[in-house]
Amino acid sequence: MSIEIVCSKCNNTLYRIKQLRPVKDIIKKNNRCPNCDAALTTDFVLSIERF
Image (cartoon, rainbow, N blue to C red; front, side, top):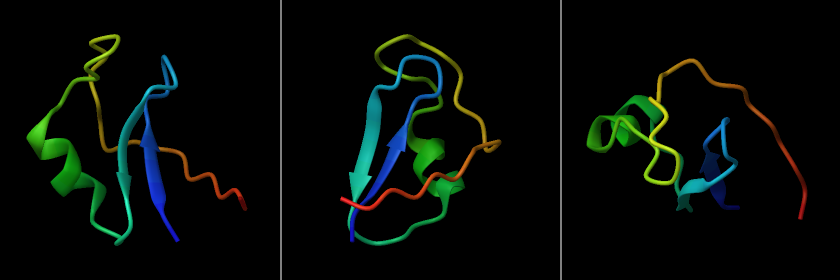
C-alpha cells in the first residue's frame, strides 16, 4: 500500500511513501508546495482510493 500526499490547491503530488509517517514530520522538511508555493499545514483531508 502506498500513500500520497497531494497539494489541495494544485493537486501536485508532494510525497509518495510506502510506510505511514506522521504528516507533521513530512511537512517539517518543506512547508510550501514546490509547484504553486502554497503554504502546507497540518489541516488535511483524508481520502482513501483503491487502485
